[in-house]
Picture 1 (cartoon, protein in one colour):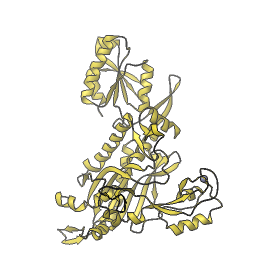
Picture 2 (cartoon, helix red, strand yellow; picture 1 turned 90 degrees about the vertical axis):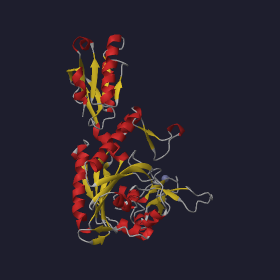
Picture 3 (cartoon, helix red, strand yellow; picture 1 turned 180 degrees about the vertical axis):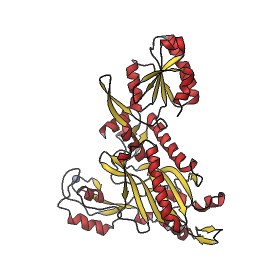
Picture 4 (tube, protein in one colour; picture 1 turned 45 degrees about the horizontal axis):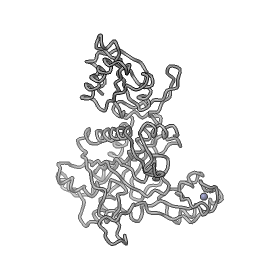
Length: 451
Ligand SMILES: [Zn+2]
């Protein structure tokens, strides 16, 4: 964990938000390398969930929505975590997480009374993770929705407009719009990538649990009787999508939810082997007709579907695939992190698949002080840049150091221009994973780098 966090900062993947002001809890910034990796992960997701599917379309709904949406969905009442405070050091914690750590099953879906009872029964075993004292306040449920004063000019903030707590509500409320403006027939899906916000009580574990984060969600609308069949298909589809990104299968596992929310038919998480153990990477959930039923009641319009062939109307059932960009980013970094030995030294490299690597190739002149090598290297760099991006040019330091720099950010190939290049128009193509170098004709380099 420390190795990844420090590499992430040192090489420009992830910075703590507002770091020069001491840092802002639960929020992160993506640096020059991070933004490329992040964009590639989103692009791969979109490709898998939209472009490779004839039955799924994209959407980009706004972060702000009518607050009635969050009432209808149950978020203003039920979207909360159990908060407990240490009376000694005044640090706040999630009561369910504290209980879990001492081996007592608990989760955020329990009522305030339920969790207070369990917390009370175990109070002799519970110590403050911060100061070690055993003196806690009562557990109370704290709503996770982040409030704003958008459109409110009264200063009393009695009618808050929320920053969305999840992206899928924007999909549900556009179900009719998409249906009426496309030729889609059930079953079909709507996919969206976008920011969401939650007042997490104790944001922790780097990108794993943040207060501002990005979601990648796909909601799939089915006939009621097809819901579970489609659910199984979606589970399989998501599993293979993660493998295609290069995540090792041994680091993934399925976990079925034991304590389902009342409307859910079934729910699974795909867990990743994070440094603290297997934990949720993304979810595949069968949500029944809850979402469209709630919004039908909330807005007073029937959000149903008319099947022409069968001449029947029904409220579609929904299965969803829901994941976080930050969690996937973190898992991909962990999975790609590799140490080996090269030329008698320990080497660190990120074994990204080329399609998600932040930099696709680096071009070096062997020596910085030979103008003809530098000019030729610049020429090759410009040529590659037209076809493949991003590509970097580096003439700083000895060649071994330059290779290491690229290894650390996961650049799959380095192209080195040397004296032989001036004779026969070939260059050295170095493979990140093996360190092996081969002579390749410059004309062939682009096709070799193409993914
Ligand atoms: Zn304490």
